Figure (cartoon, rainbow, N blue to C red):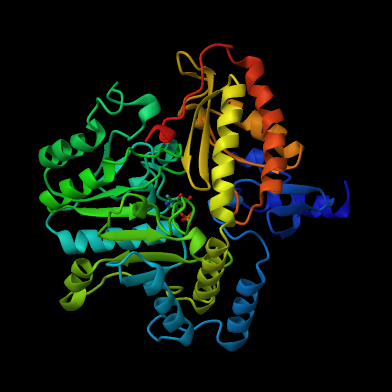
Length: 459
Ligand SMILES: Cc1ncc(COP(=O)(O)O)c(C=O)c1O
């Protein structure tokens, strides 16, 4: 073992690996460099980043404008308590007001997506009292702190329910998951039952303060709703005096084509949370944005929430340059052109590989659902398998891709195709060639029957 390998092993032995069995956190890959859509390990091996790390490095790696702005702020004023304000906060707020959906104009700053959701919960519960319940959906991830995890439907909530799950009054609604409709129906004959059921649920539950949704479900499937879903949900929330909270931590910042995903359906939430792409992950920042009604409530109320690192100048320093870079990129037309191309090529891959059941997504945010049998939709692995330690088919596929120089995030049933928005057609071809080969691992164990579908492309 080389000296550096031994230091890595030592480091791992003295730290906790995230979301992992600690026996598997022994020799994490040492990353030495990253640039554009690539990152490099300590042997100089290159990997194409097909998931923007954790769907956050939207502008790719080593963006000079962002790095410069952070450096400048570090020299000028790296920290000051959040009770003061700074020039960089003025700039960040001015920038956000120019890009946020009109009507969301009051912001709270934290340092992560889960904290942005914690902030949203404080706003919901204080402003909607005595109503206190929050409806989330089973296919969802909203973070690892108490509020974020309590809202989370995915299996990471299960082991934590008695450990850290301290937020009461969270109920889960059936998903907007057309490939495996929880109501056993088919769009459009279903008349969007998943939205209509929320009206029933709100009325029957009572005391519902808010509904929280990922506009396109991220980690848990890239579930794109039919066009009627969000207009219907907006109306249901209004009629029942319930706040609509859109968690755009992953879907924001042009990931789905528009600056924020709810704009695909022209629906304005009451509260929007975001993080990740707001700085392209160069600095840790969470944003909770509200409409005037929620903001006004706190004029004569004590906003009982805050952090030492709220409004952190270094976090905020990346907002203005990141937005500038997004605008330049969108003006160039590259992202739009490549996302159209990526969609077509992913459809081709799905057709070719028997292990791909559904291909769905929007913009630069796609998922391949990996199945054993596409006729019956039998899965290789299900939710509970994520926690069982069983080797998952998606992990085998992504492991093969990684060995061949492609990083692609795998969940228990889907692969996450979410490259940086700067990816070129040539780089896309390189990625898809490696993915094409990796999918053969799934094909070997899949039944060669049925055809792939693409639910979202039918909307
Ligand atoms: C939709 C969504 N909400 C919240 C979070 C939590 O964000 P963070 O990990 O920055 O706390 C995530 C993280 O992946 C997410 O995808």
